[in-house]
Length: 426
Image 1 (cartoon, helix red, strand yellow):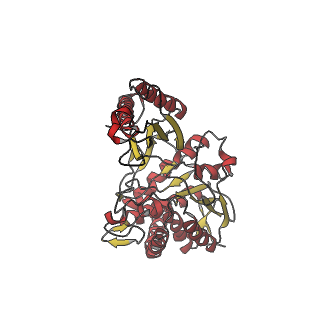
Image 2 (cartoon, one colour):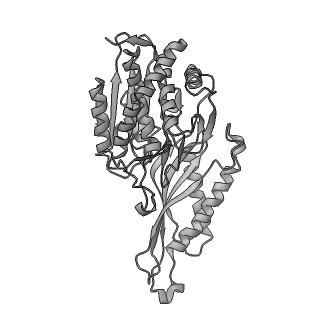
Image 3 (cartoon, helix red, strand yellow):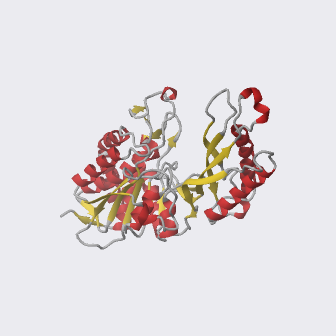
């Protein structure tokens, strides 16, 4: 692509950025936490339909995906777990096809009084757009749409099929992106504009979600020594899981791209519940845990090691040795992935990034979950997870850099032009 056209595309992105920001904020006002994604997906559907894309919308069907090796177990109703896809079909299919993917679901807010601003009332201060889900990842989701809008404003469109995917369940199972794959959506490359600090993700951990159910022996607190406190027993098990975490981190030298990371494997006790009454020794406790695994590790093998760790720890406890905890898998059961270097898609992204940012594209390794694994592992599709600068995702006062979002949108528009080719709007 000549520099003149590149400049025109970036100018078109800049001209449309105010509208892009308005739509992003409208989407952020939809509180699309798990089970409540339908409002945001309706907004996405309308936006894509109004642009003339061929539309598809469906609720994730567990029966269609549970036999797939990428499936994660789920314990909630999927009636409102809606996926939306808008498809651009060219006049002449001359280029390479592309999936522009993003997730609409967001994590819970936590206590509202700990936010500086209401989480679902987006606001701007300087270069930062504040609000739950703005960074992770509604700004990126909207960048996909407005990158194509920028080309349209120049009377241009991709000369190949482009699938705009807005999926759910990224924050808990990855089953949304998997459902789209099983439904038949495939392409020569994919882009996911997650908040990745203007960099490309080279490798990504897998993730397992599980619950540890601990039973105790309830008695009146005056006779506490005769009972068995399930909450205190759970804390002992947490200590054992942390020892396993340290053991897995010590193995990082065996895994390419992870050798130099200080702490790639995290076991997070994200939720704990137990007991019924302050004056009763608690009879039960449940831990919700998220554990990371290296690329190449089978989640089933990791799960066995986790269960063996808990079993060994229980043997050393007078009560748990006869009343061992049980483990239940209730979410992510996913492999990690490595994006191999040297693909045409990565080369074109690097070129587009250099034009948009004026600097070379860097890559890095992230210890968080990404839907990129669905494309890389199960469709042999180069998936470029690449997105804007952010702060405090999954935390209070989540925010995303507006300057970064605009440049990322420019990179995506340039990538589309080079990867798919361009044709005149009819």
